[in-house]
Image (cartoon, rainbow over the protein chains, first blue to last red):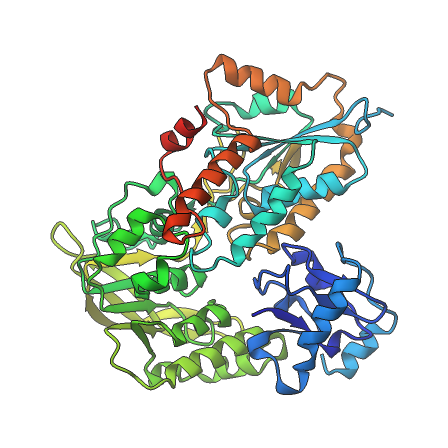
Length: 101
Length: 458
């Protein structure tokens, strides 16, 4: 069991989730965030924080997003930790509207 | 301009409480670019607050948050002074005399009352007492829970209610390899409970359980979950609520409840019933709880603002055991302002305030600041915000007088014969608990009496 960031985060990266993570398990690149499954304690605090509903518990993950389990684990291993809230990516608000939120 | 917060003149901060909000305040201070010494005071000899004594024993992964706190405690600028009761062993005034700032992170230690006749009859307990008891909290070590009743009732619709129900529902085999306290496991092994009723004031579209907690009720060894399909029916406003885009978390909870309601009933020996739209009116019994009278509720008001109102129709349930789990409540700290109605310390952005005036050098974070809502991580954002306020006030915190910090406090404690416990000493208790757990294949066997903890340290 772990918690997964999926493609809705891409080009948004609002990072509201980061402020409530009790264990600093979010990592980031220029596109989005990823959760380190070895550090995440499955508290689910981040899930309702995401304005574009990009974060899922593994058990709730839609089938077409299952590849993100591996992507999160791989990316998180090499990328820096996101310790604090960052500014959303340019165009994040437009992308949010586009996604229907 | 003073040089406060520099190597020569470090900011001296006391944090009262060693749970999540205290440690996240500590983390935020250590991450800031000022030089700070932090003294964390804890009333028990052991740290970590509700992560140690609130999080359910069968949720070990959540307790891994402790790893983060232990890492914060490694800082040479951090000092733990445990087994020290602020307000009793040390006054708030003595803390402010020895520190530039004091952050209260002492949580919400008691429960809200139902306010119904018979509430305190033997057999009626608070969830806090039961949770503290099975988690080995010294305050609740000698509480007696009589599990001879075949029926147990839990009033509440949140995760603590779910924890209490699950611990009552689980088999000894499901619990014996967790860090549940031994005395609790022994009592639970003798339990006669067959029917557990989790009763909520509002409807299935308003409950506060998380989907994850509910999912655990799908696959208990000895207990099946029963939700009457009629109980899942929604009034038009609730149906609208679940369609609302801003309410998608609640929709997930409802879907998970529906899944539980649709489960085929098996013939497991225990049943956990979730039931809605009922409020206890009276607890009855001669000398001990015998039955609860409930009143049916209906929801009224607009979508997302509905409240439960009694219909006048009542129903009785025979039971000898009841837990109320309708929310925690803070306790007043001597000499600090307190909002009696909300059960918290009044504040403005984390600055403790009285009559809309901030009291210099006094801050608050966590449940005692905002009330008992949110989970472990919610406290991180909250503590970051309080520390932000403190740092904005930095220059005003220097009153020109020298602050003795840990030295001053330790001197006072020594003259009062208060046996304070350091972080290194806690690590000794920690290791001993882990060692005690090993032969039983438990992550730890907690010490549950304060004198046992102190005896270990010599």
